[in-house]
Image (cartoon, rainbow, N blue to C red):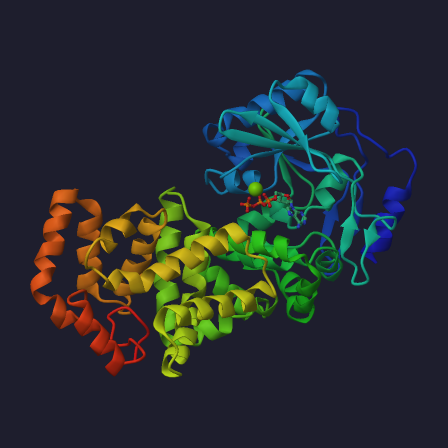
Length: 478
Ligand code: ATP
Ligand code: MG
């Protein structure tokens, strides 16, 4: 019904484009499936006394982009997640601007501006380290949009009016426009009401919107976890049934979304939400195996709690490290099986890494750069038990040493690696070479007892007795 409604509305001639700075459309009322009315053309405009956005939290550069565009007669607003976060009193992590100027018109106004994207062009306006993503109001996906057989929109690259731009956004709380000049918030879909009720509500008909872009199912779970919002029942209900649609989404896009989820500052809550919604099979099929494994769950919980803390502290995160944490227990399990079968320790670890990465690659394309980091971090783990000769100094020089040691410490926290060994390595990493040598010298006396270093001939004999090379402090549990 709503589809027809929109079609009828936007098929009307003469509603092509707003003139800058006006909001003169007639107030049209519609009703969505739940009987909730909403205004389609004319936004509710909130003043600062109502919305209470603290202008100091708004990026100066985003304000500058808006002011520059407005000074040339264009409309320009801060939009999307930034407005939502500002209304919640949070400092947004990035700022997007929406305008009725075309990408070329935007580019001309700024010294460092680049048009990117082929299908739908947006402009990156750059100020030092900050980039303000500036996009031209986009039209709704129409009957002429290219879709696949499941209704997924493949192309929708037409410019449109501001109200159309609002209607094609995902959730009502993500569809508000903030004009920093007048300090007003333009709200087309009762976003403010939902924000106050801490509710995520899909704009339009949820099933159709999920079919257009199944990633919206992942987004709603992420926002619910991150913002601690509830998901309105009609928005949540169709997800279980539509979860399979994720299979049609390009693996690279799923990876991007997965990364956003893990870096949201509420990573574990996101994973739990995904599983509850029945969505994890499509992005992260190995999640069941990890969370159902007690040790795997405690390791991941600890790893993600630290990740979330880093996000909250504004510290950088390494995606390779994160994904290494995510899949570690599967690697460990497979490694254990191989060791039990009599495979040799290091090759068995490499085979386990290949196996797990291949399984995950079926759903999420983890870029090669990251799998390289993950492999290095994992491969380091058994090396932490070798503290003889020059090996520790060599390890120190390797690029992934710090990350691998962090990882090893994390394992020690959950009882998956030797705590004393982790402490020793931390001391070794943080000191100077003289002290390092004395730390190593101090080990000589009792190295034999720990099965580290020592006489190579004795090592050989020991290996012959124990073909698996087992008994390590950090290798697979036996
Ligand atoms: P955050 O950046 O905090 O993850 P966000 O809401 O800003 O959240 P972005 O991915 O940066 O998310 O997108 C910016 C805005 O673009 C959103 O707020 C929403 O209005 C719109 N948007 C993004 N992705 C979609 C989508 N898949 N479908 C519809 N609208 C979308
Ligand atoms: Mg954003």
